[in-house]
Image (cartoon, rainbow, N blue to C red; front, side, top):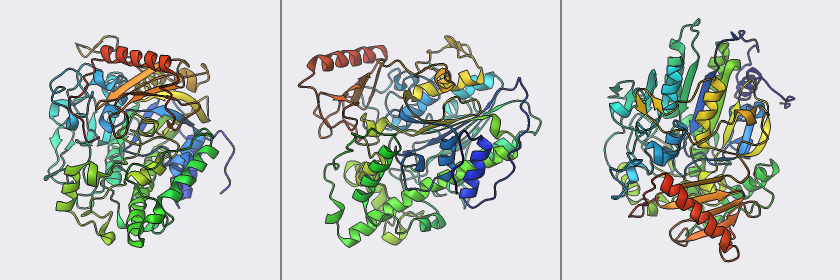
Amino acid sequence: MTRPAWPLSLGTVLALGVAACGGAPASDAVAPQAPARRPNILLVVADDLGFTDLGAYGSEIRTPVLDNLAASGLVFSQFRTSPTCSPTRASLLSGTDPHVSGLGNMAEDLAPNQEGQPGYEGYLNFDVAPLPAVLRQAGYRTYMAGKWHLGRDGATSPKARGFDRSFALLPGGSSHFKERRVMEGEGQAPFREDDTLVERLPDDFYSTRSFTDKLLGYLGERGPDDPAPFFAYLAFSAPHFPLQAPDESLAVYRGTYDAGYDALFEARLAAVKRLGLAPANATGDPRYHGSRPWASLTPDERTVEARRMEIFAAMVTDLDTAVGRVLAFLRGRGELDRTIVVFMSDNGAEGHRLETEWAAAAETARACCDNSLDNMGRPSSYVWLGPDWARASAAPFHYFKGYPTEGGIRAPFIVSYPGLGRRGRTDARAHVTDVMPTLLDLAGVSAPSGQFEGRAVAAMTGVSLKPFLERRAEAAHDAGEVTAGELMGKRFVTEGSLKAVWMPPPHGIGDWQLFDLAADPSEQHDLRGSRSADLARLAARWDDYATRHRVILPNRVSGY
């Protein structure tokens, strides 16, 4: 298929995506937009999707819908998140640092000295104004389907925090089929639809497909003449472990990864450089400690390892297909070309070696599941990606999910809407805290000023990207702006291209290290000895950040 000239309308984008998936493109005609109507918003979040896991970011995985969305929009190479999912999602829906919004640490990993402390509630707290509630107050219909991970009881549910309709996986993850097996231990993961806990999932439940079905159902409940715009939040739990997909999806990738993870790493690194999404001087990461070259694996070991990546790729393609279904629905309703579409991942790919680094999850897998080769990826299996394939997912960068290095916090981010003034690729820096202020600005909705729903709330710390997106500003953030973060004791602070990182052994040195991302985007050359004054300045700025955000360093080291 010949790539069309830029710029593309969202309608054209979807037609291309549907055609690439084997469907027939429909007419590009759309209903005229009433001048006073605010834009619709579709916010799509993938779970543990790595930087190079989409075709638009250099992947071999088939993602035609998202690739064509990227072709109509703006693709960010320097969008950063928190190192793990719930802190990122708290920032996404509050526009603030997670230490302000209640996820200073993941609820599952709170250290004893953090329990009960402000900013460590383990849910999206009431010191912030949630995005769906702000938009609903401004007249939006608000819908959510997918992973919540921001509170388990009724008072902290999606319904309570601003969604008119919601179907949510409440914890951080579960099996993707109807068994809803928890990630650790025994029992079933809780789901909630609106105010009601879900007692049983349908027999044909599969997370990616079923979350999409629910969202489409909610959108379909709106009358054709409903003048209110909508905010739709589609929060996938894929491709988070356990890696599982329907049989027909698994079959698509059989044999694709027989060349191994080392070959994939080299191919992804070359592709992301060729696309201009990583600097030419990026070397990528050395092997994770304890990892082995592909050539040293036995034939049986290679087969098992390749199967992991086949399942992961199948999950990503299913996700892409699901996004295409939503875009097709909106297009059929004449609403796509008045909809802001944002796609992102919540952090880097999951690369921990759970057999040795997550003892409880490994024990669950041994006790519950059949992980034989022929059963891998099916409902009764429990497998994960591992560090060698995750190294390819983060190909230009250091480490993966759980770490404040670039491989943990650099994620795909695509923005597309009719008034977008920039298209293609950008190296402009952006952060997950920028998403809420940007969406409010694009919607013409004022941010809460100190008070919301009768209570005091913190101001957003992110900034609106709208001036940059519409070419009224040359950058999203000032070049020398300082950003900082912390999770589970691991810390980072940046100023311009300089980045200081603190991690405990064996992944760090138990002290600050300094890197120049312009010269060393893969964070391999520690400058602490030659630029001690710069390191001292950045460390002091992290201390200032920690004081302002009431950071409590954990008194125990987490598995992450």
